[in-house]
Image (tube, rainbow, N blue to C red; front, side, top):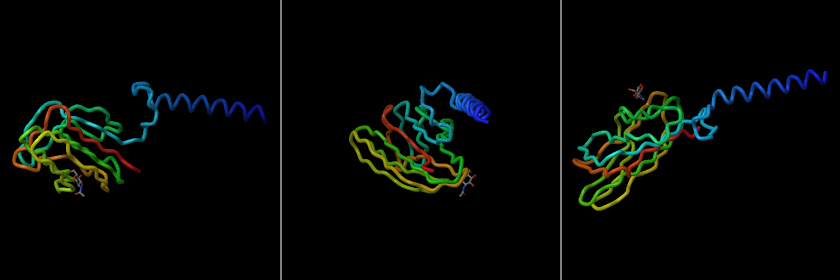
Length: 159
Ligand SMILES: *[C@@H]1O[C@H](CO)[C@@H](O)[C@H](O)[C@H]1NC(C)=O
């Protein structure tokens, strides 16, 4: 009986290690906790001016666990119902504004303001999303100037 138990324990451990290796892989710099996680950060890649209502282009993806952020249309799509957090930070240039709004499926969820001068502004919000709901950032002024590579958009699922 003891032998059978021992064999079972060894087999379970071996299988467990093999399957966790399979799921986690080794392309994430040793980070092994991302299997069920939804989290991303994307940043701008060049100075761009945006007219009102234009989607801000965070083209450079720094992290995208769960692949819910799409850097083709710059939108986050909720993979499941839940509570999410989004945070963004826009770098402006002197004599331009950096007004932005977080949009959920076409409706404004929150707005952030920054006036002329070198500034860094944005907001952090908690939001309930249903599966397939989309979230993105838009210019909220006739002409905003998003400076260089210093602007970022991040989001993650809380539960
Ligand atoms: C939000 O938009 C997505 C994609 O168009 C759609 O699948 C989803 O049903 C919309 N959600 C609501 C609450 O309208």
